[in-house]
Image 1 (cartoon, one colour):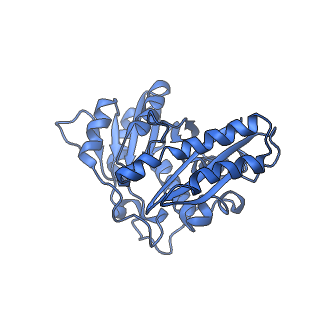
Image 2 (tube, rainbow, N blue to C red):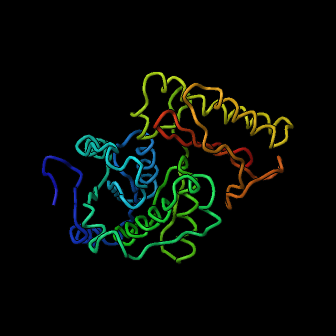
Image 3 (cartoon, rainbow, N blue to C red):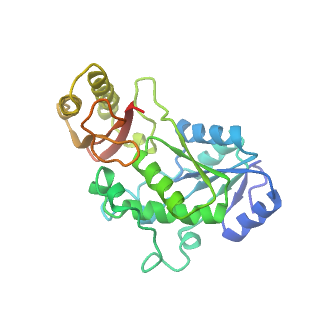
Amino acid sequence: MGNPALKVLVVRTVHEYRSWRDKVGAATVGFVPTMGALHEGHMALVEAARKTCDHVVVSIFVNPLQFGPNEDYGKYPRVFEQDLKLCEKFGVSAVFHPSVDVMYPNGQIGITTVQPPAQLIAGLCGAFRPGHFVGVATVVNNLLNIVRPDCAFFGEKDYQQLQVIKHMVADLNMQVQIVGVPIVRENDGLALSSRNVYLSQEQRELAPQIYSALTATKNLIRNGSTVEDAVSHGKAILTALNGVAVQYFECCDPQTLQPVTDPAAPCIVLVAAKYGDVRLIDNLVINP
């Protein structure tokens, strides 16, 4: 069931995991679903889980359902042994590392999927990654059914994903608490992401401008600018950079993700930008 040289238990099948979960009994379980290539941002989720739960379970599964045909499923970083060492260091109880066949025993075509509300996924990342959030909701639903956690922890960097999952859990009356954990950043402001390893040296030097643009937008709105002017200014910071293509730079309601024009209303600014072939996302709350 696991590598005896490691303190963290590694399980690869649903049966193995459920055997462990049954042994845990009434102890609380915090769950951190990941696609691997773990970094300090993921470990912040683990730390949050450890503070509130008796055991922490991390899943490592690169989910094919959430990748489009021209996306990076094939080259997404897979460094399982390195991930295990991190999990052991941070006190993870069990790592669930299933194969595609374990997660989708009846194949990936013609299976039951979870369709999030259209208003949540029509814009932002959903407009550029059709089918992505169906894949995300489907795999998270599957994982929650397998893991049976008391709480599940998700990073706020993937903000649209977090809202999709919160709505799914509420709409389907799932017995799990979804906890959002704040973004972890490098010293220069770049949000931690497994995809940062794809950046060239030149792209890496430009990448912190995403956070600079978000911060400038927030400051303008807080100082009396219209939302339209502030967003235009923030977007212009990024479009002026060589080799950077902005997919979206929008101010939205934190719950509904619908556009916001009132600078006094609750709002969050969200951005996706491509540095060459590397797609980075980030966000910053303006008014909670």
